[in-house]
Length: 105
Image (cartoon, one colour):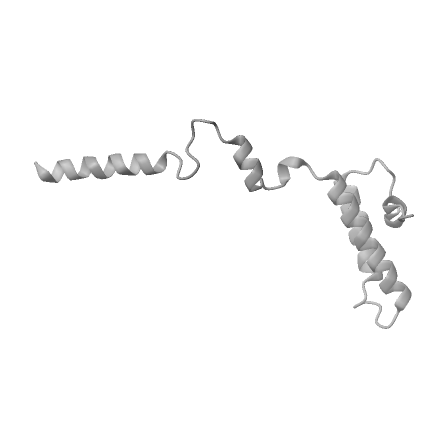
């Protein structure tokens, strides 16, 4: 069974993202391999901290913070909206036509 990320980071289950981050940074600095050269236990602890932090931040991410995928964008597109180019191409074409008429008169 996987290790409880809350116990690895020594935080309570209702911890906020800020509390998770502070706990992770504090412990990661303490057990970082560069600060504990040759200490296999510190290295292993550091790896467990990273895994716990990744697990908790992925679990608690807001969906708004994730960039939309192509599938998300296709679902959001209105049926009348063209698949590519949007309305910009038409607007640019109208602008070019307007400029041409100014110089042809």
